[in-house]
Length: 206
Image 1 (cartoon, helix red, strand yellow):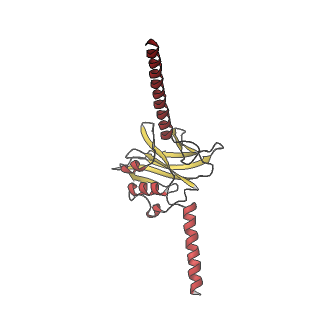
Image 2: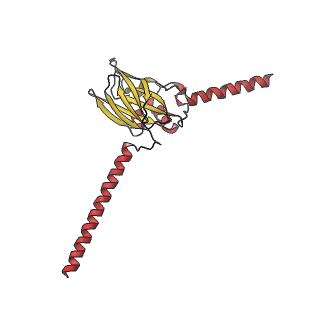
Image 3: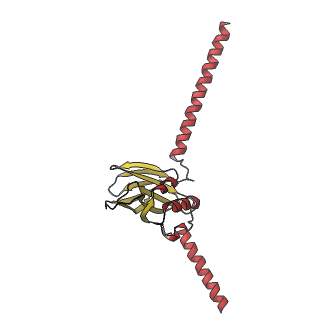
């Protein structure tokens, strides 16, 4: 009898762990404060100025990056925020308001036919002073068919678009590196072409 009870308890614990990893996570639609330095742990951050304030947005797609962000964020996060997420199924959208006041929280999200999701962020103009901390919000989105995420305030103000890694689209940084590489390669080709032309003219002269 005791063995059966232990077996049932083990199965329940495993099912609970699976549920947490698949869709129940303490940071889903979490809203609170993070330490200022936590922003440095956000991968490929997109900074957007809106209404005189700077918002930093990103998408986290692996547990190692999530752990670094949670560690840097401070005690404001729930104790079980380190719980691993199944990032094969979900992506975590993080938005930080770089002000030592106010509050932000994520609201409705939707996925369009083109693979671009939209997340609404509610900006609440309360005015306490948070020394060394910024308001932040997190939002999980199912990763199936997800390519990018448009983030906007509830009044329609755009905070930009973040690209989901592993999609067929490249990140803005990757696109920038590609353009820079292409430009540099074009300059090299032009230089070599000029040298060849000058060399041909010189040989004809002699």
